[in-house]
Image 1 (cartoon, rainbow, N blue to C red):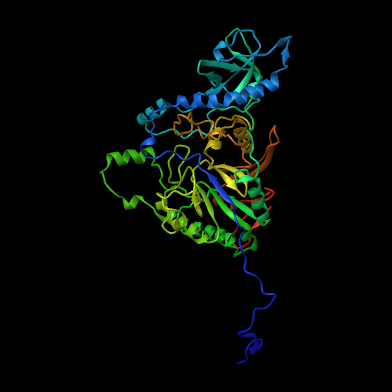
Image 2 (tube, one colour):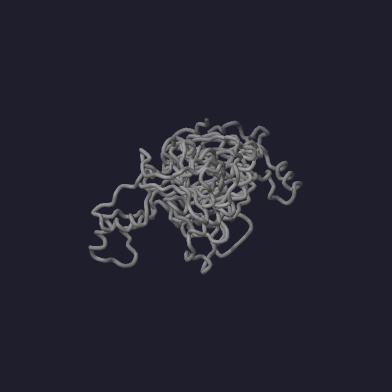
Length: 497
């Protein structure tokens, strides 16, 4: 049998034109831990939630006052100049003034604890409401409150503004004969100071050196809503995604320096039973201990296998979401170490604390940190989904993302209609530094834009769809922050747009 190419090709040096092995771009990663809750006895729920609102108002009031003074310093109406009032109860009828407070929206469709208690007496629970605001606006009122009391707001200007319970604003106008404050104009805190790129590194020289040493062309991948159920269809979806991330279906995959998974990795890891099922369980025979028939380990095992396959090649930042096995209240704490028997070797044990980030970084929701010098802020989607219920007109998710940043509140409706931890001394849900990238997972569709701030801030907004439905993954250029969306389908190498 003749040897292909001749005997001289064996035991020889490699050819000069031999393709070099593909190498992945490095990722400079420095997470912040501002959403970590205290452990042990330091974490408790004895404090009142009213303190959360008083704390937010105290921290945001100086910023709102500065913006309002710059906007209304020379404003006059009918020869009368607008003056500042310290408290909402100090507003006087007929006087042109402005005051700072927290918005409260009185809505007839908004859920209350009394309604939750009364559900126990219903034959079947009513469906979950898609909106809190009524279609005709009857019964919905705007309030402005501070530590002194509440002031009812009215005026056509309110209809053109996006407002939710919890945001801190300044309103200008006058009180009418009915004791209602007619709003002429409104101001919000607007974007806070944005840190410079590499600002957290040790001095500008070190940051500049990191920027020079980092090769260009790297990508940061952001994805959400894997929604694994353990069925065979999920395996095909994960195999296609794995092939791309590992560079087996496309050389572009190795340009990804880090993967961010923004919540809802599991579809229903701990489903809440319906009211009929709960009643049947209470009336039926009691079963104590572990119930194997009611537990499905398939989704978590599938997700763990996926992570263990890609982690040797690519670092992962993992946020929990609404359907993941984590605490319901915001900020959600990292997914437990025990959920990842195959991939937990890539993260430090729970008791070991290190300043160095893990290769598999299990983080909180919301989460913030620096990637390649850029400040990132992201959530699993619950705050935006809750804001959507307050909005009567447009359903533009990017507009909601922009308002969240300009309100400087990552979850403004918490704790009114969104559960959160009752913070006492500091509220990490306040946005103190303007991010360069703000992403929100598990939204109806992909959308992206860039907004600007009064001091030159530039923020890239990303509304991430559910990957299980759209097969879309978002790629950010690590140098320019340019955005492209990649569609990963079965049998192809991904289509970017």
